Every structure is written in C-alpha cells, then in structure tokens.
Amino acid sequence: MAALADRGLRARGEAVQRVRCEGRDGLQRRAREEAPPSIFNKEVGSLFWQRDRWVRGFIGEFVSGRWLEMGTLRQKVLAGYILATPILQAVSFVLLPTAIALGLLVKTPLAVAVLMFLPALPIAVTVLTQLIGLHDFCKQYDQRASVWHYASVLFLAPLYQVLLAAAAAVAVWKFAIGDDTWYKTGRASEHRAVSAVERRSAETAETAESVEVAA
Image 1 (tube, rainbow, N blue to C red):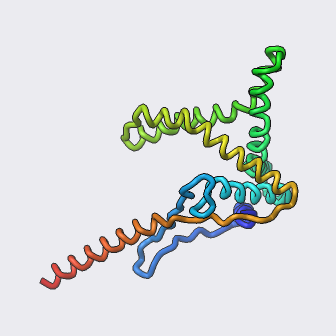
Image 2: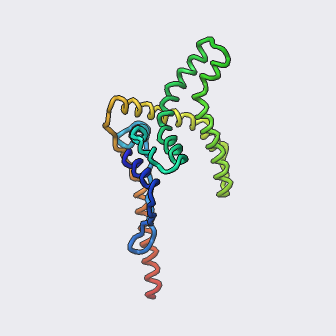
Image 3: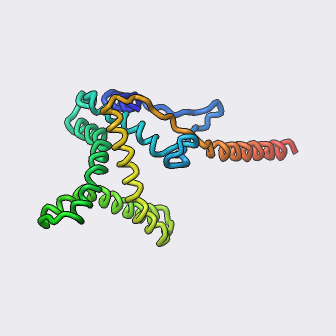
C-alpha cells in the first residue's frame, strides 16, 4: 500500500498521461472492485485486516515525508491531511471510550466533560454528511430512499467508523513495533460470475445478429 501511495504522490507531482484501457475490439474495459465479504474472517476476506494493511501503508508514506516534496503548499497540506487521517482515527479510538467512561463515572466540570466528547464529533460529522449525500444521490438519480435507508446510515455508520478506527489503532501499534507482516485480502470473486453472464449474453446476442444477417 505504501508503494501505491508513493506512486500516487509521484504522479500528482508530475505530468502523467492518462490512457484508457481498450480491448482489440475497441471497447473500453473497466475493473470491478470487490469488497471483502466479512469483517474479521481472513479465509474468505476480511475488511478489518484489509484496513490494517492500508493504514500501515498510509503511515509509512506519511513518515517518509515524500509528500513534503509536492509543488504547492495546498498540495502538501492536502496530502499530509489524507495520510495522517488514519493516525487521527487511531487516536479517536483510544480517546473515545476513555472520554465516555470519564464523562459518566467521574465528576468533572461541565466544560471538561464536553471536551472529553470531542473525539465523537468526527463520527457525528461523517454520519451527517452521509445522510446528506444519500439525499442528494437519490435526488440526482430520481430515486427514493426509504426510512430504512436513512436509519441504516444513522445507526450503522457510527459502528462502521468505530471499526475503521479500531483497525487504524491496530495498524499504528504494528507500525510502532516494527511489525511488517501483512494480510492479503481474500476475494469471493462474485463479480466474475456476473461478468461471465454478461459475456454469454453478449455472445448470444452476436450469434443472433449473425443468424439474422445470414438469413
């Protein structure tokens, strides 16, 4: 992941020609990204351990300082913010339960108690932006989101953010102790079955057209 991040930074700082991937038939090709089918199961593909690998790549690139070589201050700030985000997630994962416990169990001044809940603000902002994004997406593509869609974002998105923060915390710990082992994400390859169906459908359509022309 560090290598990919490094290539991205180098490409951003240089003039890189963009090309399209086309087959011999002239049709543009596209890649399909498949998400891991489980949270912790490494055998079938784990989201948690995939994030652990990704975050260590981001941390490695952040520590290397190559992002400081970018051309403008705006590019440096943006790259530094993106690469440091997993570290902030890890800090939030540690501070959030501590803040909740102290806020509920320890008698503290109101101002201090409010400050303890600051790590929860990024999660709240993320959930709010996702709710707004869901509304705008449905409006733009003339779709209707049900109450369940909004409820799922409202109640499940915080859990998802906690999961990402936990993976970030594990990644930061592994990076700190020099653990460079990593897990290659398994794939269920469900998209390949869809591709095969599409390919057979296309072949059937071409055969039908050939028969009609011949007739």
